[in-house]
Length: 496
Image 1 (cartoon, helix red, strand yellow):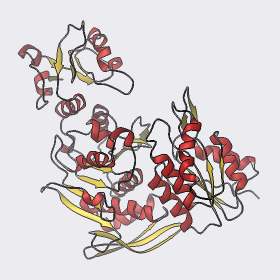
Image 2 (cartoon, rainbow, N blue to C red):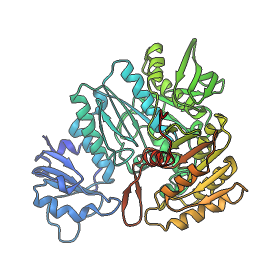
Image 3 (tube, helix red, strand yellow):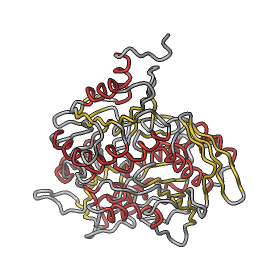
Image 4 (cartoon, rainbow, N blue to C red):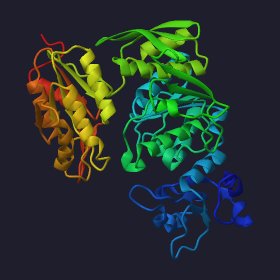
């Protein structure tokens, strides 16, 4: 419980708030009117499907103290209304005041970039846990708080949900957080007011232009993680020295910059890399330290993910032996180049690659394993940036030996229209291909096509356990569906 005036400290307002209202006690914060209780401050901002102001009267009927919004009160509303400059930033700062600065007890570590956020953050979490820390990890595949997993709605939750998870972690003795920070979250202000110990920039390539419009604006959203943004700038920045866009990141004088990569001028670099299907090994060099590392993860892209995590670990002063052990223990990331093995004489890999660059990287990793052929199955998301669809088609057509083009999450779009956009790029090459709208049938076609020594890459959905269609969301897990189909073909793991 806290007086409203204290909750609003530092929140930019568009109008005055009476002394009487400022002195009233706030029992809690809510942006979902269904959760409002007596004494709640209800924050009404525009969601994906509705305007929160529509629920202002309902919130007041349930006992809300007042409504806070960047918009004016709707016609007919008669209760206390606090108008602010920016709704989500106001909520974030109100959370900071109400719950207290999270960095007071927690080391916050944020990963941003187009690819690699999930894997890098899970790797850093493994380092922390190996060092005996109680941790939280928040991101695309779910949120884990002191070992307890819960599903994630967004890659980066709303600020209020973040603060509640911080509180839960603190109550369980937690000290370290590794979290994905999406461009959506930065653009909307979900992470406004968070002071990060280490901010990591993995890479940048075309994605989310349906929100940002241009890649320059997409980059500008990422840049926000590395500067003062309602709180102090990060203490450390870990920057991929080999990525053109990452090198453009600008930091403030208070931030110590560490770079990582394969280039000689990187602060933390990998040398003597060996890669095969059983994993990676390389030597990490930083200053006078030479650290042999082994990982079950495969491919050059995971060298960068490991380097990102190690660089963040170095920023925390973790012991090098703990770093090496933590990397070794993180032996799989759900839906990230994940093997499906039912004893079949060809490899099957499921990967989350859903951008042109990620698809190219995944196919390149597949090729590094020296299969007889690479059979790539992919689709493109509906209601998202159309311009990347032909680029994904080009990536698959140029680098694969055989392609099966199918649906991903078509959402409200006609799946055939989405596929036709991808075909524009795919047909620039003479690569043999099938088109099949039904994803399960498409996987069956890929398995039927595969011969001994081939590699099937099932790309796009990775860890997801659903498919979003126009009128419904259905259960669909690429890994389980592929396993089921392999068994129908007569394959059984450890059979015979």
